[in-house]
Length: 71
Image (cartoon, rainbow, N blue to C red):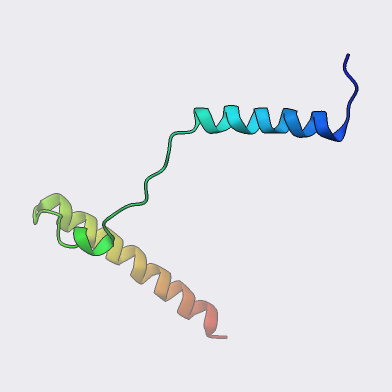
């Protein structure tokens, strides 16, 4: 077994990092922001139901927060 030195540890770490970098797929930053998708949903029954559920959940959260504030 080889002697464990700082130099050998540094070489091993370099090799591990190199192998990890080879396995990782490069990430590309998104070119569009959220404003590019505003209004993309179709106006259909499913979308209306989904939005109603979201609004109901938000309203329930607001009411729960108000109830916690009042003594």
